[in-house]
Amino acid sequence: MKSREFKLKTDSFDINYESEITIDLVEEYLEDDLEIPAKFIESLGISDTYVNIKLSRSREYFNDDWYVNLQRVS
Image 1 (cartoon, rainbow, N blue to C red):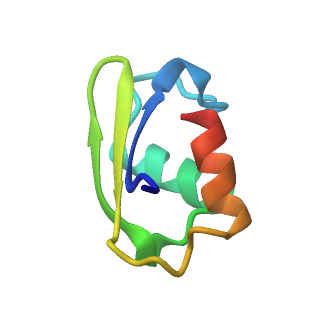
Image 2 (cartoon, rainbow, N blue to C red; image 1 turned 60 degrees about the vertical axis):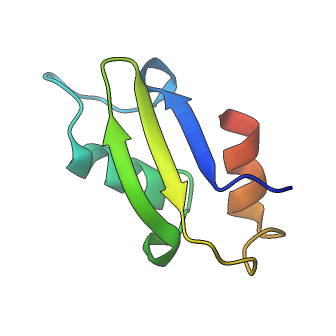
């Protein structure tokens, strides 16, 4: 079964920041760098070392390039 929940290490993000990673920075990174459409992101959670991403329960994105890339980096 295809996954709809992903865990990414925050130290793997290519984000230039001077303070803590915020939800806004994560959302911008996911949409701009990983090209994940915002309409498919159901929820985000940030811990000290991980970002948890939960996608919508749609099947329409399983073959999209951004989904394949997300599986690769998680």
